[in-house]
Image (cartoon, rainbow, N blue to C red):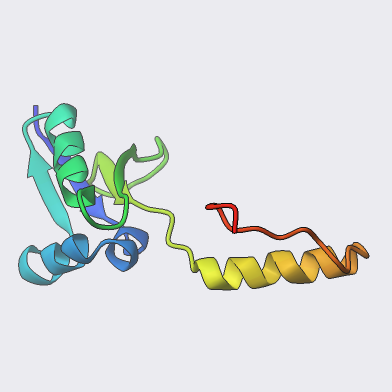
Length: 102
């Protein structure tokens, strides 16, 4: 059984290795099993943006079984949105701290 995985734009944006693969070898990649595809995704994630294999929707007509995906976010923009949201709620002096407690 062969598993075909297509690399989605979110994975290319978040993971440089995935972007290089698309440039060099194209969007679709075949693997002998789902486990092999997931190991491939884990290897891509090592030291780079996190990517994973997601099963294609049953109504998806494309010739792929799965997609390599990621949550492509811009943390700075998300933080700005949270700051604006706090202001609209009236929280003018929130107790903001970084993850390291500073």
